[in-house]
Length: 144
Image (cartoon, rainbow, N blue to C red):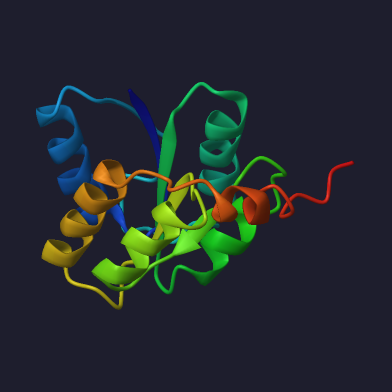
């Protein structure tokens, strides 16, 4: 499995810990985010992350910014992406089960590092339920 990760200046600390977790599980990481707290434009990290997932170079993506909103909006401009902004465990679980999300968006300024690490574990261990949810997910894309 390969995970693409992207972040702006609000997320380097979280990103480094998430990368440690992923690598400890034998997961390859593609790092498109900044490694410093110096201000940068989040689309510059999020577009390459979403492209990696959309193209199949990565199985899933994890993106981080201050509120998570800008990162999620940017990722969701890509037709093959279903990025979900999550701030609690149940949202993470449901977005995988019901929406087949392929990118987890974490609002770094609104959740603790411990919560963010837990979100990653839940996201990676939760399966899409398919069935009636599959028919709904199939209607998301505007490509056509």
